[in-house]
Length: 239
Ligand code: ATP
View 1 (cartoon, rainbow, N blue to C red):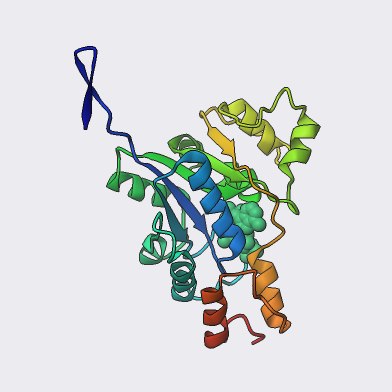
View 2: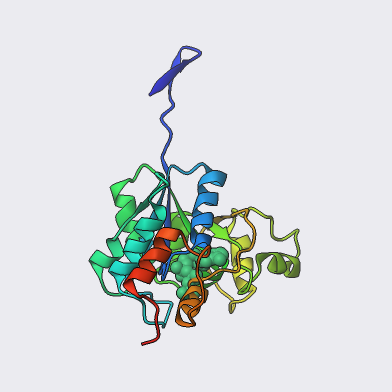
């Protein structure tokens, strides 16, 4: 589409804004949904592609079968048309590397502006990810605060608010954030990141698995469609 400005035709077609939301989603919970919805709202994203991890290089825990986790994500996102799910990591099998996933997705829509959504705990570990230096520069990072692990607010206080603006666009700022809990790093890549503005959510998949095993209710911690699936399939019970 184009419009005429002072005799010149200006191309007004906007680049689509697409975010990847990767995770084990074991199971998906309301925290994940609120983070993804906040990202859409705050950054006017066109789409969020949920990408369940097949096998995480970062988590030692045994994961529930990929197909169950995929099914639960499908059920959880069914009523939000801007959410889609990709089984790309299940199709690839083996360890799930974000760089491989992003390369494949970006090749499908090279004209899009790409984002990656994650919690602060995952953001802290980003420098340790496979091919992290190129990965960091490959998209814009949208970081949700996470309370129990590493509180961004506390880190900002520790580091001094003049050094860390709330929305960072330089690698120095983000590296400073990472350095708050990581050994010194020597990354030179440009890293663009923004903080997602949402309340701290003390909810995790670990909590939900524990509650299932102990026979406690998980109602209102996960979407009802996910809770029913967990109950019907008898998931997360003591073996
Ligand atoms: P587990 O408890 O099994 O480690 P999890 O709750 O962290 O799982 P993941 O599927 O590993 O869930 O998370 C996917 C992404 O969502 C990660 O980047 C994680 O940091 C982020 N995330 C999950 N829960 C929250 C939360 N309550 N607040 C902020 N970020 C979160």
